[in-house]
Length: 172
Image 1 (cartoon, rainbow, N blue to C red):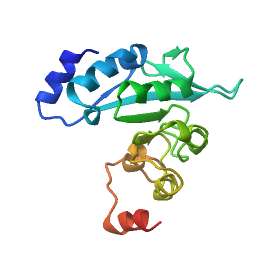
Image 2: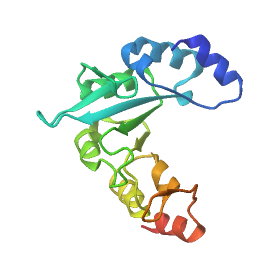
Image 3: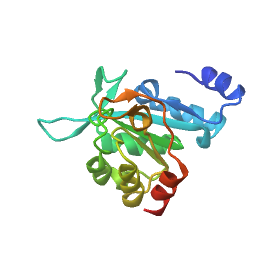
Image 4: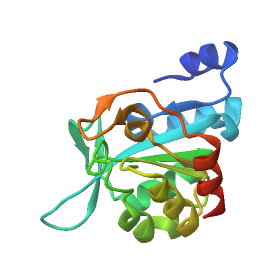
């Protein structure tokens, strides 16, 4: 929430920090941090959710408990203008569903995203990851549930892709 905390964390050897609610409420914080430590060390995470009544994506703060009344398109541009080196987009609608990433979101906003982007929420198969990388210029894909829940009963099991699966993702 402040530059002093960021410097303490980076001095521990961490390469990059991710800000969320504090930075979205105070965009100047992004600029201060970027000028002090460099944009390459700064990612900003945005939680988004589709408003079913007006079909607009809205920004949420504090783990989805508060709506930020700002235009998402303008926010994405502001993050970049203030010096964020990466944007991490968490789809609240897709998070934990394992039904695929929110490609509709990326299609709508891809022209606003000029910095590296990671998408979180929805990965349920290696094919979902391949479609994301094949269709959009992203650098990362959050895949939590894909590697944790296994089998028809969704038992908790930490799992990692084997070499065959890794090659399948790369080849597609």
